[in-house]
Amino acid sequence: MASMGTRRVLVTGCSSGIGLAVAARLAKDELRRFKVVATMRDLKKRGPLEKAAGDSLNKTLEIKELDACCEASIKECVNSLPNRRVDILVSNAGVGMIGPLECQSIAAMKELFDTNFFGLVRLVKEVLPDMKQRQSGHIVVMSSVMGIQGLLFNDVYSASKFAVEGFCESLAVQALKFNIKTTLVEPGPVMTEFERKVYEDAEMMDLSETDEETAKIFREVYLPYSKKVFTSLGQTTEEQTLKVITAKDPPLRHQTNRLYTPVTALKHADPTGRLPLDTFYKMIFNCARAQLRTADTVSAHRKSVLRTKKIQPKL
Image (cartoon, rainbow, N blue to C red):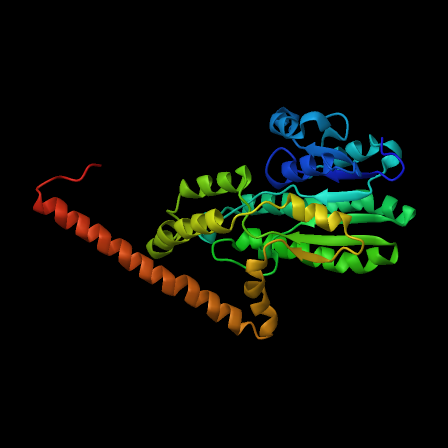
């Protein structure tokens, strides 16, 4: 139970990735300022979190079941807390989706929105009335820089984060009247098992529903380039989230990777939208043509060498 001066933090999506890291970091806070309720849809996947929590398990961190896609599950979890008190909600549960639009099913898109957007809405609907009554609270939402600027082959995922940003920006005005803070944490690339799984699935994607050129750009340009970006710019976000939660006057938006600030700033620099659109087009497709030409040249050279040596290529 949260004692005087200790704030109870409810974190969703803690079986892996950002949620796991944030929950473990808050539970290990040197000043013991938090009582963490780390939740996940499937408690069978609690092993990695228990390992990360270490000595804080069942002391400053407890694990509970919560499915963000089920109102009854959310209510049951919140009702299990003393006085239903949630001082800080960290809404993190989410799913990813990348690839050509033609290759994505409407059913999969709806499932993504059910978690990424409506999951957040369900959580806020459950905890907001109590926060209003107490005249205090902090709603922290794991968004993305893709909630500010769309990215090639991330159409649906980006759309869900745009929805999250619009929802929170609108709600924040009302919440402030009740002394409730709202913060959108907007990470760039974050290297976790969540992201690795998304890219593994993308590499195995059936691209038969799209045209050959789009499939080629996705496989030979986008995926290799994205991996390079994640490797060089990937970061962790738990310290940034702790900074936001402990801030005296937390911001509405907090980008965790300053290298992306110039990219997102393009949108505000030109209200017509032409500047960011032209910039991204040149970055992606000029680069794509160059890389595809290089790949074709290397492939042609390899075949030529094999023919010269009279060696059949291995299949």
